[in-house]
Length: 243
Image (cartoon, rainbow, N blue to C red):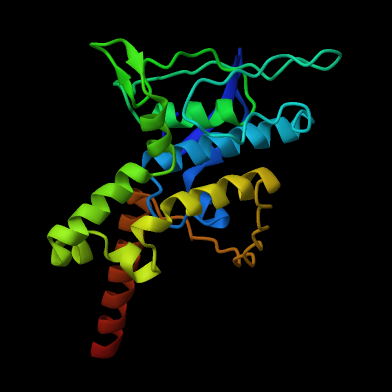
């Protein structure tokens, strides 16, 4: 799992079986066209995975997760008389489990989207190791990209030229730092409205190439014999001309 590719899989003897997958490169479809590798995009990708998985297993109307995104802890409790919530576990792989790592943004998005994933808040942005306290508001700011927005605002005031250079794609797209929260809120709503994957386009089969046969090469003895025959024929031609 990476922040760009978030799958749900389980192991079989013959190999891993992929249940569903969400990709960060799908986010432009939901309005997030830039910053596809930041924490907010990782959250969106996790949310997309959750809603897509639950839709596939017809659990999306039962377990909706939460739309009140505070950055705090949320658990998806079983609904009486219904199937239990879809449970899965985070496989961190070779990623580093540092506090605030983007991979935990995908985890949080998946949980808020309705998946049942055992976790704690100790690795989310806003957790203080010294005080052993969790500030949910700091985490919320990361979910909506407000930490990036604040940096963009300060850089724009202090060094407009560097801002125009460093965030040229945002400037070109007309994305202002003040619009980040509204942009990601709209993306979350769009993901919930239609998490289904885009149908794959069928590739047209290429026209069959005409078959060709390569003549088999002669063996060394055959080549020598052919050369000798040509020499003999050439000598006979010369002798016939002299007569």
